[in-house]
Amino acid sequence: MPTAAVRTPAPARTEAGSPVDSAKAPTLSIPRYLQRHYWWAYIHPNAIRFFDHDPIINFILWGNYAKLRNAALDELGETLPGQTLQVACAYGDLTPHLAERAAAGGGRLDVIDIVPAQLRNTRRKLKADAPVRLLNMDASDLNLADESYDRAIVYLLFHEQPDEYRERTLAEIFRVVKPGGTVVIIDFAQPEWWHPWRYWFKPLLAVLEPFALDLWKKPLTSWMPAPWSEREWPRRQYFGGYFQKLVITR
Ligand SMILES: C[S@@+](CC[C@H](N)C(=O)[O-])C[C@H]1O[C@@H](n2cnc3c(N)ncnc32)[C@H](O)[C@@H]1O
Image (cartoon, rainbow, N blue to C red; front, side):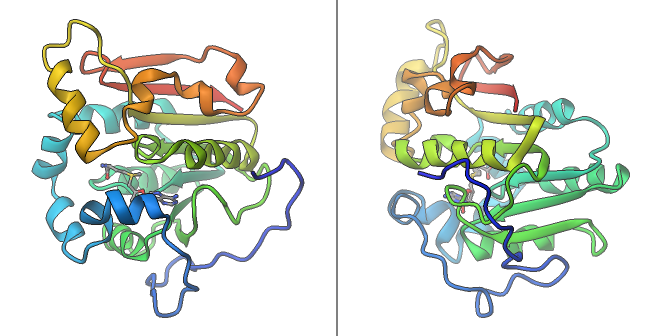
C-alpha cells in the first residue's frame, strides 16, 4: 500500500511533446486484470482503431458519452489553471477538452496510463502546442510528487479494477492532489430499482466487466482512505443511476 510519506518527485517517464514511444519507455508490466479482462478494449493492436470513434463509445455508454464527459468538464470549470491530473486515458475527446481548458487557464494537464499505445493515441488527438504531458504509469503506483496537483479526474476507471487496485489507486490520488484540491470521479453505480434494463445489465457486466458489479454493491467511498471514506460527498446520478459523478475535496 502506498503511504503518505513524502516521495521524491521522479522525472516523467515519457516527456511531454514527444511521441510516446514504447521502444524508449521503460517496460512497466500491465496489470493482470487488464491483460485478462480488457485486452480486447485497450491492449490488442486493433482495439484503439475499433473503439475510439464517437458512435462506438456512445453505444458502449448507452448514449451517455457527451453527458458524462460534460458532467466531468462542468465540474472542473471553463479554465484549468495550475496542475491537472487525468488518471488513465479515455476514448473520445475528453482529453482534448481538458487540454484546451488547461491552455486557457495557463495550466498543465498530465495524463497517465499503463498502456503506451493509449498514450500515443491520446497524443494523436491533441494540438501540437497543447500543455499536456503523457506519462506511462500505473495508477496504483504513481511516480508523482505528494500534493502536486490542484485537481484530478478519473473517468470510468474504477469499475475496471479489482478491489486492491481500486483502493491503491484512490490512495495514490489522495496522495498527489493538494489539500483543498478537487477529485472528480465518473463511474458506474447500481441503477435504480425501476431501471428497465437493470436485470440484463447485470449478466452482461458479469461477463464483460466483472469488477463493475463491485460498484453496484458498495459506494466508491468504501475504497477510499480515511478521512475521505468517512464523509458523504456530492454525488449525482445519470441514466437511472447506472452512472455516477462523485466530487471530493482533498
Ligand atoms: C480509464 S478507462 C476508460 C474506459 C472508457 N470505456 C473510455 O475510454 O471512455 C481505460 C484506460 O484505463 C487504463 N488503465 C487501466 N488500468 C490502469 C492502471 N492500473 N494504470 C494506468 N492506466 C490504467 C487503460 O490502459 C485504458 O487506457
